[in-house]
Length: 253
Image 1 (spheres, rainbow, N blue to C red):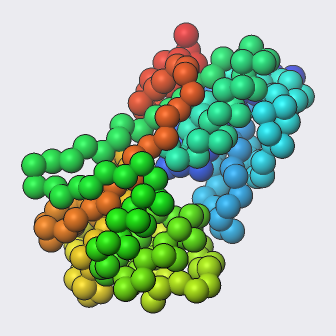
Image 2: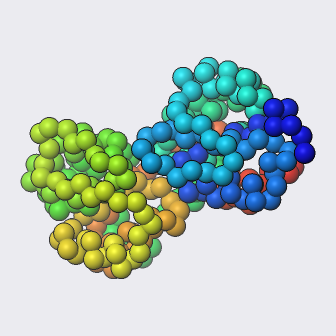
Image 3: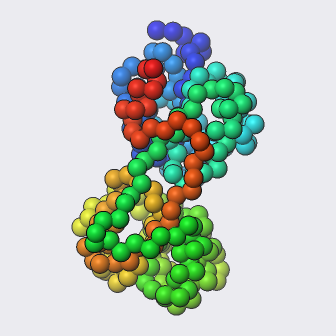
């Protein structure tokens, strides 16, 4: 086994369940004998899951800061396994890897697609969804995270059940709201019970894809509920992978 200090570094831009699975698989298959497996976490939650291998927490200081980090840590490949809506770090990774000529792959979850019984209304962003709610006051289950809540200040007449991993900081004034602090995954039965117990009539969700939070959409379908679905931002051009196996194949190539 090579000395760790002489090993090149694989950088995983993480924070998603797929990133944790990837790191676990790489460590489990012994890749750390050939290179350091370093996962970078944004640090937006106080008690994040700890990935296998090595970890760092915090930003890089923009594209140039990331480029400097890649060179300083002898990074030979970068895997962007961030959230589909973390468009800034994806852009920065694309710029930094282009500048340093380090291969980059985006691990992209397949997006959710509406089925025949679904009642989805698509929106380009949260602000568009908030505008829709100003015309249709409702009891809303807001599952888009703790960022961007200020756009819903205009939704007079609505009630919000806001589910977040960390306590949400609600701007003032804000419509009547309850902040439910919980970490998934949640079962279909749990989601149905939660929506029924709070008399929810509208679900607001980002199209994050994946299986972990899909039950809320199944619950909305079962309850014949309207879903305000926020579409994904466009990712930078580059190589794509839809799962851990494709990424590992890329590393072996």
